[in-house]
Structure formats: C-alpha cells, structure tokens
Image 1: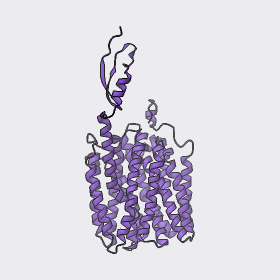
Image 2: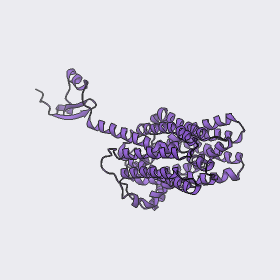
Image 3: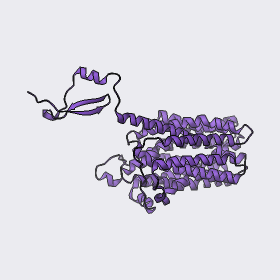
Image 4: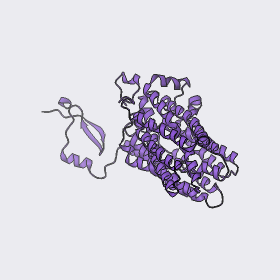
Length: 454
C-alpha cells in the first residue's frame, strides 16, 4: 500500500489547498476533479499577498496621479507665465528647466542627510512641500519671487523623483516593474492631460495665475496625504554613500559609462525642449489655453506609450532600454525644427503638436527606462548608489543644457540651433541601436561572474 502523504498548506491562485510533500518519488499528491472544482469555485478568498499587492498598487497609483499630475500639467505653463505675464527673459526659462535637475544632485553630496528619513516618509514630505511652494507661487506678481518659488518647486520635484526611484525597488519586483510603472505613468499622464487645459483656461480668466496654481497645490497636498497610506511594509531607508563612489561607478561598469555618455549628449534636446517650446509658442503668438492644449499633446503621447508600448518592452538595463525614448525624440526634434524654421502659420502649430506628441512617447520610454535600468544594472547590490549615480549625471546635464540652449536660441540663427538639436538626437538614437550598446545581461560585471542575471 502506498503510504499516505502528509499534507501541507500551500497558497495558489485559487486560494488555500493541501499538497502531499513526502510521497514516494517526491511527487505532489494528486487532486480529484471534484477537489479542483471546489478549490476553483466562486467565492474563494484570494491570497493575502495578492490582495496586499493590489491595494499597494492602487493606492500608489492614485497618490501618484494626485501628487504628480499637477506638476506634469504645469510643465509648459509655469515658464510661459513667467515670460508672458511677468516679463521674464528666456534665461529664466532655462533656469527653471534646469532647476528640476538640481534635485537629482542632492543625494550625490548629501545622501547622509537624506538617509535620516525613510524613503516613503521623504516622498510624503517632499510632496507636501511642493504643495506649499505652488501656493506661494500662486500669489506672486513679480518675476523674482515667482521665479524663485518655481525654481525651488522644481528642485523639490527632482529630489522626489530620485527618492521614489530608490523606493520602487522595495515596492515592485523586477518582472512586474515595467507593467506596474507603465500603468502608473499612464495614469499620471492622463491626469496631466485633463488638468493642462483646465489650468490653461483658469489662467485666461483675467484674475491672474493664482486660481490654477492654487488648485494644483490642493491636489498635490491630497496626493501627499494619500501616499502616506501606501502599505510599503517596513520603513525602508536609503543607504548613504560617499560622493566619490558616483564617479568610481562609471569607471567600474562600462555599460553604465556608455549610458551616461549618450544621455548627456541627448540632454541638448531632452532637457532643452522646454525652452524650444516656449520659443515656438511665442513665435506663433499662442495664449495660455493653446499652450495648455499643446502640453496636452505631450501627455497624450505619454499615455499612448504607457498603454500600448512600454508594458510590452523588456527593460533589461543599459542603453538599449532607451531605444524608444531616443528614436521618438529624434523624430520629435525633426518635426519641431521644421516648425521653427518654416513660416507655416496654422500648420506650424500642428507641427508643434505633432512634435510634442512624439516627445511624449519618448518621455514615457525615458521614465520607465530610468526607473528600471538603474536597479537592473545594480543586480541587487548598491541599488541606491546606481540610482543616485544615474540621477547625478542626469542632473549635471539637466543643469548645463537648458542654460546652453537658452543662450543658443538667442545667439545662434534658428537653422543652426535646430540643426545641432537634430544632429545630436539622431546620433544618440543611432547609438542605442548599435548591437554593442550593452550586453544582454542587465547585471553589473561583478554579478555576471557569479552567473546572476537581472
């Protein structure tokens, strides 16, 4: 007689069942068809782990929409308010576009300070601070206090980005990150697309820009409060590191070096597009509502990419993960160059919309690739170092290029400036398709030697 198997509880997709663990031959105990029907029948409780994961993702996405969508919607409107209503020069636009990247540099020098607060709590506090800065900027009527409030707001936004990219390693595992983060970014983009024309319309009421910014402040505060309820498990802290390790990492990992070099060159267009857009908006004499609609074209591109493209891509880490971003950005740079060089009238406005749409697709690709590549390249080790090293170099290029582009659009003939933007972006796109762009494994060399893959 075959000895009876001892039964041990196991969790499956259909709930709790019992599996034989010590049958001769080591096979599991078989189940009858009736057992299968009972276990798969309606009303079975889902595993607690699955319910917890769904609740985490639902809360996290909702809080992201409330906390980040207002800033996405105001991306083109904040500098345009400074230029049109407050008489700022394009140099102010360059400073504002560079400000968000200064937040990426913070952890490079002050990681020991940031590490004193858990990652989740720091995101909550930074979103709340963003809400306060929006409220302050709403009631400023002079360019200097308004500009300083916006610059600080964008700095806080950059630091929030860096903290979240480190935290997401503890929220989602590697396999589910592309789909989870794509859905999250799709929701944020959809929120931004809805809010952008609303904010633009509020700006044209004739009472100033305070209604739009104050509404954005209230929505952002709600996102901060909701994110505090995200069940992130234990309070994960960020590992502090010496600033010199950021530079040493580039020398140690050649795939990371290739990624940094190409993305720095891409910075001319990727970080300077805000200045280019403002230049085109002013050239075609657009109002706040039209600017909001054109910003909506960017977010529409983000939504399309998040729904139909990025969930089906494999972001292994390295330069190849940025192919979508760099290829569509090359297309966007060509379209916007045509709008800037040709005197196309209404067709020029449509070209700007098409260029922004293509850039939105690339922006989603860049966001998902940025959030996944650093962790994948780390291979489970030094995640905070990889994430913040990537953010550091992204911050350096983000500070330099908006200022350079702001100078170039004034000092150089428009055909020359747009030729530089198109040339660099096409070159970066071609580099991402080179078969030696990176190795198939996303793990760093020290992890490859032990057979680990990401």
